[in-house]
Length: 530
Image (cartoon, rainbow, N blue to C red; front, side, top):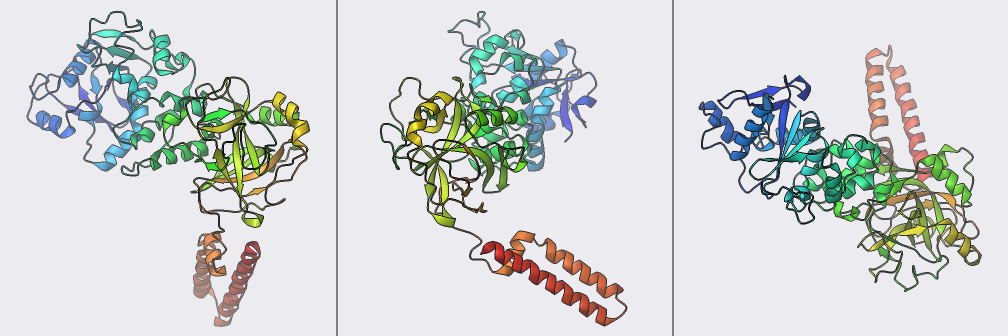
């Protein structure tokens, strides 16, 4: 999308569009600010420009006037502000602008961050009681990317006096926002920070619209997705699916609190206090606030994770790529995972994630069996909130994760061998499922707390398990599995034969052959459904 800029070198208000930020001669200044109750729109500024108004006109807001002044003082010929430079009545332009916002800020020569609630006489901004620390600027969702993306950010007070530079204040900004100082100083790339840590930066920030909780984070993950105002919290779920597709970082699933448990508990218990284990939680986080306690999580590369699991007594993978730990999107409804699993008593299992907390303990998702036989499914279960104990918890959340360490497994191994975990079936084939929060699992039952690679299907939200393919006819199954591709190829081949065949008999034989191929495909699908 072209970048629309205002000229700072001319007295009269004038717009000019550039194809890319790199094509702007002399660079441009970008304004980062907290929206007030009344912001100038593109239509208002354009009508002033068409009427030949200058920046001193009473219809020009103080923000635009002061931003133009600072750009002129810096000898930068252009400046940009979101409100007057984006036509928000044009949905296509608004959607493209939101997707391009991070890139535009990253290419700005200077970003001016206006803090309207910080007085100009606040000279000691490092003071614990300073207005700078409590500014609303650091609590808004959109200002997160505006703080990280530009290489140079200059903070200005309410009266537009300069407070300091981002690189100089990086340590203070880390205390306020949680963003790593090395990221702010461009010594560490944003992409090198794990997913949960990046999402924790946004955990304490608010947006005017629910959907903006996700849209304001697209640039941090280099994600592009359609803008759909009105979808509510579904936007953040879509963002997480996009992130998982681009970067298989297990910390994305490690949100919420964690606690230590005893292995080999009776069915229906998950911790010493007897909290029910069937309390099901969602797979993806409902909002960035769920990651407020995830800042200290550390990702583990797959090679190190496999080696660690072998040390813990996991089955040797023998280089089998099908059994390597992975989490991928299966379809719109869920995930397909290869993860090591440990029995934690009764029908409970724990799927171990390739990440650890600040104590160095691995984190695992507790899985609760529901049903038996081919319809045995697993949902992610959690404990009800309980009084805090020493050494327990990653935050003020309902405990959703299990904290595992090698010493605890060794201590409990003699116990656990007397009560192998129950799965409802010994071998369950991996099954596609159209409903969230259930999982189909195929794995070998091992003795004791030994780990085994398991193939898990984790959908998104709790429902009664069922096989969505069971009610389909063979023809419907062919349509679902082939996606219409087989039929379209057959039809194209038939049309080609009819046009090129020298005799009708040849066409008839070809049609019969193609029909036999279709019957064979449907028979194969019927066998899969049996």
